[in-house]
Image 1 (cartoon, rainbow, N blue to C red):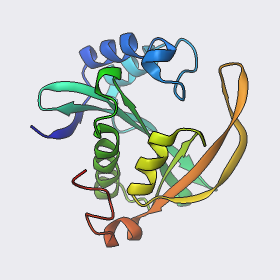
Image 2 (cartoon, one colour):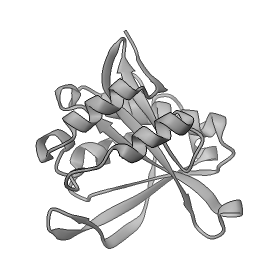
Image 3 (tube, rainbow, N blue to C red):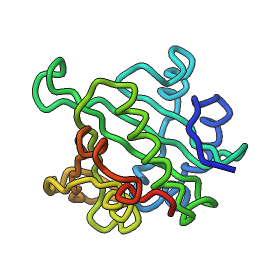
Image 4 (tube, one colour):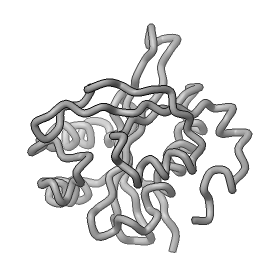
Length: 182
């Protein structure tokens, strides 16, 4: 069996809503309170949750749904000349700690650089999120800085670390440098 990304299905969205509907399911770093999944359902109905400024793919290991990846349009200036994508991953609780997060993010970065004419992919994470920090480093992202108190979560403001990966860095990296085979 192998890990692969595929277009999200309505049954996947139902699973995400159920699994990520509490702190334990969403994880400490992704729990923002109860979330309305109607915007994802609408994006699925209108465009298959692809082809917009907010996109989602399901992560499958063989025939098993293990999570989702998302990418959101960001711009450092005018969107017409400075657009990039910010990525995120959500692994279902029973599949965490098995390497699916890094593999899914690797697949997503490769998908973005293959199918979109962008030069930059970025990711943000909490400075205490050790698992995501390990993934980010293995994938070759570069730390750019700290966004001070940029995220409201669990009744307090939290810093975020901002990382980026440029197209030429991705293309030049060897499979070992990208954390493949782990």
